[in-house]
Length: 149
Length: 119
Image (cartoon, rainbow over all chains, first blue to last red; front, side):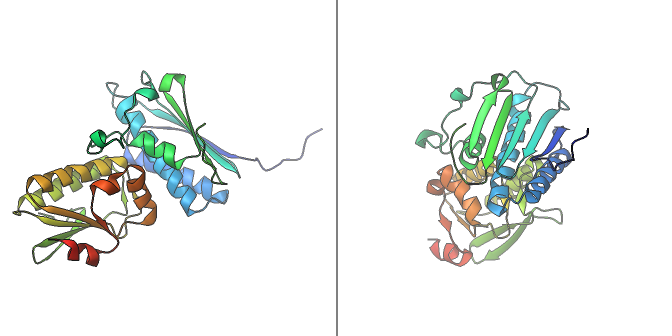
């Protein structure tokens, strides 16, 4: 006996992108479209877009450092009615997030890089590192709750 | 100087050079590099530059853009000039607050107030 089809609780997409503006923009557009479909507002979409952008740039710039320029990264989007979960997986050697310096310390304030991860942590509700730092999983909860995941 | 391919709109008001962005999203690394190069060329043509960067119509910027702003700030200071930022969208302003760059940059709500603040 077949079950009646139900609308899935989450909208999902799995994408493989290269370090090209067109690929990144397409993935962002997909993300924002899914979020709009689940009723996320402007502030949520600003936060998630910013975090996504920083995560992807980090994957290509730091994760893929020394790898061929066309090495792709994998994007997983799971956009539910209450929370959006975005994972970015690179093919690099990974890293220890504890070693990332605090960019808000006076001695680091004028450094021209190193702010991406802090912005991700600030704008998202939860952030966790998996696969030895190769995979970043970011969660945005619609209720605005912020907690390190 | 800005050309037809410029990513900037530049206008001069006395000694003050005001720069606005043509892009609503300042995310692309190549564009950010170009913006940095164009602003550098503008300030290096001045003695003690008075530079106002007006963020009107900018919806998004990345941490790479913040890095370029810091480089611009350092260059302006080296030339004994002054840098002001204005018209930053409230959501983007949060980016400056989180990174504490609101302490490094002199940020004004409007271009008018920023222009009046130059010494």
